[in-house]
Image (tube, rainbow, N blue to C red; front, side):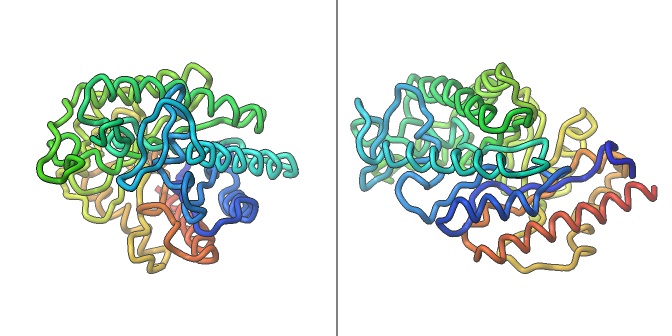
Amino acid sequence: MAPDAPQVTATALGDWPGTDPLEATRVVRGELGGPHLPHLVSLPHRGVGSDPVGRTAAILVELPVDLQPHGWRLVDRPGKDHRRAVSALSTDLNVLGDVIGAESNPAPALKIHLRGPLSLAANLHLHGGERALLDHGARREIRDSLAVGAAETVSRVQALAPGTRIHLQLDEPEIADILVGGIPTASGYRTLRAVPDQEVSDAWDAVAEAVRAVGVGTVAVTFPADRAPLDVLGMSTLSAVAVPLTGLTMAQWEQLAGHLEAGGELWAGIVPEPRRLRTVSTFAATVLTPWRQLGLPLSRLAQVRLTPDSGLESVSPSAAGTILSRLTQTADALNQEMAGN
């Protein structure tokens, strides 16, 4: 296969084990060099402010937060919890810049990941303790603040990694319940009203438009396999979806086939929980079997990027590195299938 030919690549979803950003960054960039997609690591085990919600809240513009027993809360002015989240992200960015600066041949692309606007609103609380998802105005404020903050964060990364193509991943782990009214209230005695499909797709597009304006490449959204709202994805301008392949129904695969035929990307989660490392041929078959059943041409495999099913924070650092290696080996196997077609 020619060096510049479209091909299957690999990435991870962002969360990483341990508490050392330097070691984590070196491993990720070592395993996911070009043509693969390294990512800015996040280390949830560091504690407050390094969790997915706190990390994303750290980039919000004019919406400070603090941590309460029930979770992150929107407040009037930044406190120690907010400052801790901002500091952790700044540390990771500075480490990334140092590592890239020491590389003789940096990878041409880099991914950052943030909690998506709807799942973020489901996990931020208003002054009275209720989830911000309850209030349409609060959802809009969070969406707009996230859009500005994401664009500013991308610009910071671009300054640290000149010439690198930046991609953005929006994580929406609660999206299925958000769309059907399944998110519990703060009291837990009832559930919040469903958010309309159009509002959800518009929120994704608002963030995507802001980051594209500063030069972002692909904007991807991650879904859990269960009830993945692929129809809502089709209403948006997002070009990539990250979803675990384990548990997908044939009907969902047919929706994904339509997404691929329209030119979209599939970020395919092929390393499920528990993290049992199967053979490369077994992982490759996870993609190839439904691919062939649907009659998709092998040339479209170039629209696939392989990932774990979820973040890797629950495994050991050495196991996480091994998983990345297995992903790139599986990508090589799929590229051989594509080249031999």
